[in-house]
Structure formats: C-alpha cells, structure tokens
Image 1 (cartoon, rainbow, N blue to C red):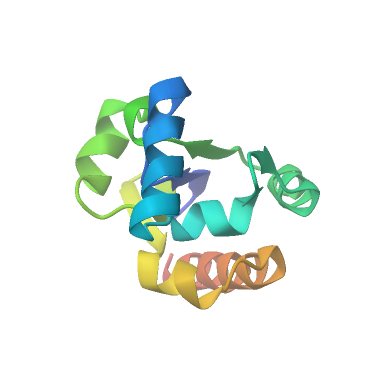
Image 2: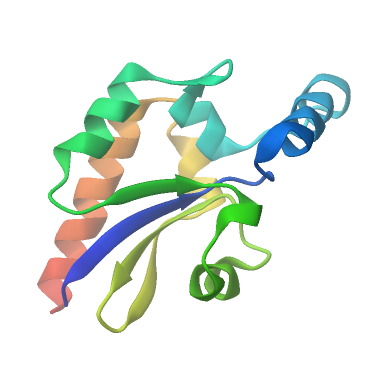
Length: 125
C-alpha cells in the first residue's frame, strides 16, 4: 500500500477567530491540542518540525478543522487532533490524540512514531 501524503489535523479552526478561540480555551479552560504542542512554539511552527515535514518524499500537511478537504473531514470527524496517512485505499491513522500526547511536545518522538507507523503500513502491503 502506497502512502500518498501525511495529514495532521489540529483540534482548532484556523484563521483569526479560530486562533483566538484556541488561545482563550488554552488560557482560561485548560484546553490544548496535542498536535499543536508538538508542532508549534507559541504561534510559530518549530524549526525542527519544518525540517521533519521537509524530510519526507511525500507531502506532509498540517491543517485546521475548517481547512480539511471533504474526504479528510469525513475520516477525522470527532477524532481530532490526529495524524493520518492518505493511501491508495483511503486514510489510515498514524497517531491518535493519545499517541500524540505521549510524544509530550517532542518533534523527535513524533518522528520516531511516524517512522514506526509508516514501516508497519509498508509491511502490511
């Protein structure tokens, strides 16, 4: 099974209003997004995350809830944040919210997790 792309879906809407809602939820209600914790430092993407995304031979997208293509929105509805692989036969989950939380904000841990999951997908082919 070939992996065409990797998609990370944040548990927040993009845009100014979405970002403000996320910040308010984080500051006042203790809410957070485990994928954001890994990929961002304050409001900017971590440099090692950019390097990781650029290291793949396939596209690695990071999108907000309101930025998902329809097929991705259907697959990820109600289960974000999440990291998925788009394959020739549909989407496969690479990392659930629990697995992303286990990375504890570490890009290196995420990189190892992705490598492990992509190897498993390749073995299953």
